[in-house]
Structure formats: C-alpha cells, structure tokens
Amino acid sequence: MMEGAIQGMLESIDDTVSIATAQIPGTDEYISQSGTPDEMQELFTPFWENWALAHAPDDQALMQGAISGMLDSLGDQHTSYMDPDQYTQANIPLDGTYEGIGAWVDPTLEYLTIVSPMSGSPAEEAGLRPGDEIIAIDGDDMTGIDGNLVIRRVLGPADSTVILTIRRAGVEIPFDVEITRATITIPSLEYRMLEDDVAYIHLLTFGDDTRDELREALEELLAQDPVGLVFDLRNNGGGYLISAIEVASEFIDEGVIMYEEYGDGSRDTYEAMGKGLATEIPLVVLINDGTASASEIVSGAIQDYGRAPLVGVTSFGKGSVQNWMPLSDDQGAVRVTIARWLTPNERQIHQIGLEPDYPIVGIPQAFIDEGFDIDSLGMEPDQIIILSEEDLQAGRDPQLDKAVEVLLGK
Image 1 (tube, rainbow, N blue to C red):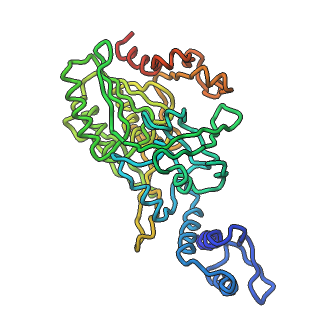
Image 2: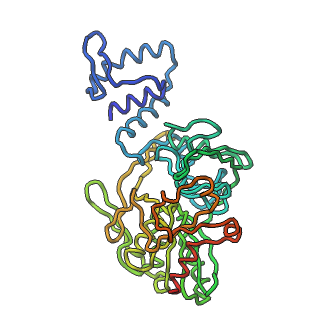
Image 3: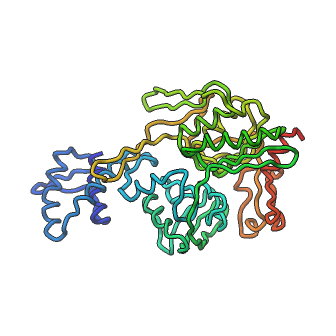
C-alpha cells in the first residue's frame, strides 16, 4: 500500500508524475514501487524539497491523494475514499429530497453507470436505462474520473440542464441526452389494486420508514381480499440492510433471510423477524437489471424458499457489503468492502445477479430502429416483447402482464 499512497499523492499534484521506477539520489541504484518504506523516504525527500521551491504544497490534497492511492492498490472497485463533499452527498437520506436527474447509480465501475432511473424522474423521462454508462458530461470526457466526482457533475440546481453522453449495450454509437434537473423526492413505494382482484406494490427503495409504509400498504390492500399480490422490485437500487430484512420478513414467516460472509470465512446470519402480514397470500416478484443490492436480498430469499417465482430479467448483481468510516476533522470517509451477501441457499449475488423463473422483457420498437441489438439480450424470441409506440402510450407492461398471468395460473 506504500507505493499506492505515494502514487496517489503524486497524482494529486501532477498527473504526469509516476514512480514506476526511480533512481536513489547520489547512487546508480534504481528502485521500483515495491521498494521498502526507508528506500521510499530516501528517494522522495529531495523530490518534495525541490517541488516546494516552485509549488505551494497542499497538505490536504496530498493526504487525500495518499488515502485514495492506498485504497486503489487493494484492487476492490467498491473500496474507495470519499472527500468531504462526496461523503455529504453519500449521506443524503434514502427517504427525502435532493436536486438532480433522479437515478440510482454505481460509481465503482469504469464509468458512472445507471442502476435504475427513479419513477417519474427526469432520468426516466429522458429514457435512461439500467446499464447506461455516462462517458461524458457537457462534452467533457469522463474517462478515468472517479465515479463520485462524476456524480457531482450530474447533480445540480433544479431547472438547470446537463448533457450526458451515453454508451449503451446493444447500441453501436454513443449518443447525447439533454436532461433538465429537478427536485427529486425519494418515496418508498407505490401501491394499488389491479384488475382481477390482484394487489400490486412497487417498492422503490429501502429507507428508514419503508417497513412502516409497506405494512400500511399491505393492511389496506389485504382488507380488499385480493387473490394474490405482485411485488415489484424493478429499478429498486437498494438501501439499508435492516430495511431489507424487515421487508423480507413480511413475506417469509421464519428462517434465514441472508448470510453476511467476511473475508476470514466467518458469518453473520440474519433471520426472519416474524409476524409478517403477507406470508400466506399468493405472490409473484418482478425483477429487472435495475434490481440491486437490498432488493436482491429480498428477491433471493423469496426465490430460495419457493415463496414466489421471479418474473423479468436477470438482476443487477450487487452483493458486497461496504462500511463507511468517517475520518477525523471532517476529512471525508473511507468506504471499505467488508463482506459479501449470500442467499439462504448460499448463492452468491455479487456480479452474478438472480435469474428469473419466468424470463420476459419488453423492448420498444424505437430502440430497435435506433440500432439496438436484441440478440445481445441472450433471451429466446418468445421472451422478448416488441412494444409499438401505441403500446408505450397505453402503458403496456409485458413483465407485469406475465406476473399477473403466473399469479392467476393462466
């Protein structure tokens, strides 16, 4: 980690400086990044002395660069340093408001990647989809830029505009999307009765109040004596772990909900909390490629117990656990991967996702006209429903239709 720290400090002052190999002053010897701490000190003392003659050192930037470099050297995409501004953004409550485009994102990949747009948000209205990569913002290339910094470029005052250049799987040429930012309200859920006496709940996030809101929705819906329930976890980017256990416990009466497995092989076991309101009602769960993290915990447990089938497409595959450790003097925080999540049957979620029992997806005809390659989906032809403009205007939802069909045994 020593070489990572030094490289990080150098990058914080001048991204052209490298320490791949360097000569020890006054000798003919060279050392590499694997040199000992004493060798590194001997090498860099004259460097810092000379650098300071022409440049005023920024101790805070050097410190932040050192931390970032050390964490990058661990090779874990989810372990990173967040400066004070990034940490503040990361702590926006999962039930609340902020100003931006309204999308769950993953900042740990090569480019900032859309996990799922929020319902009714500018991101959804602009047509952003799970898996879309933001490769440029307002014409500025985002290659090599830390995802948390990219987030700060995407956020902005309501009514301001931002142009995102999107790289999308199945579309050969990146394209620009202009989005007007808005004040984004983050609700937990939406619910209603469908035709044929089917209850429907769309859970949008796992926040502090999600359990109470879900129980209120279940009480109201169950009072109408539905024949079954469609539980929609599509485009749910996750949230708090304890909320996921609480939600799963509404549908699973007893048993393990998930395991949290650490690097040394030890585990924490999370079990159903009991007294769930919907442990008996016939159930179908909707998932898609925006179903991630906490929503995969719930879906995986429900699937493992045979409590309900999953309908849709393979989920996102975010199953690792990060802890945020605030640094002293408000210097930001370190986010460190400490464990991975396993389903009750000990299936790994991370980078794999959950496979639906009934695969089905709806693709707008316009996407195909624009060059989208449906073969890239890896699905059978009868699992792909092509949606016309009339279908879209009518709100046709093939995945929801399939869920109701499965629930009613049609």
